[in-house]
Length: 213
Image (cartoon, rainbow, N blue to C red; front, side):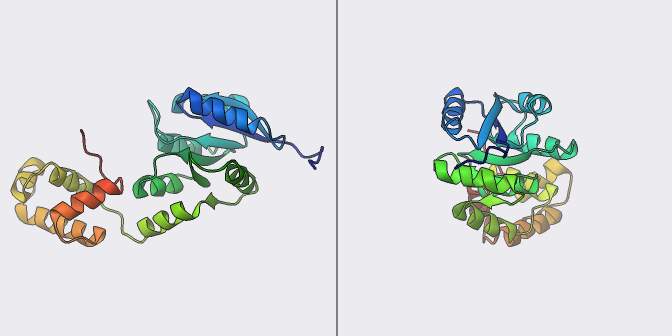
């Protein structure tokens, strides 16, 4: 039985896919303990709607046109938004899970999650707790055990993915070949790999770098 004196949790849905938005709105409408205050198709619209709708919880996709879900999380942190964020996405590389949690997401769900788990996540996050599914939590733990690559190492790793040699990387960055070699060895150590091919493969699989198709 629902308590009449308990205010429904206000929800803002942020996803650029109309079908997903409609499905979430329809599903949540059947539960009086939550109330969908609005929806947004982009990160920019989401930030504007937060000021208007004053949601308690933002269900946030990561991949959207314009600014990304990670950008929205960072902006929410900077403006000290009162709303809490639950990432709801089909995108689950280790790096994106890590970045979302680091940026302030209190929950992380995949879009194939059950209705029951979504409601549990909303209730938990509204109560000030985190909610991360077991599968995602395991991936996050594995990612957090590795040291973060530096900006220079990420730059070099992207060049390795394009097939550049140490000498070519050094010429492009105006650093010595020996310095490049030291960075490459550090990359191998942090990613726990043995060679360039394995480093690039692991980096792509985990979402650390993106390769243009």
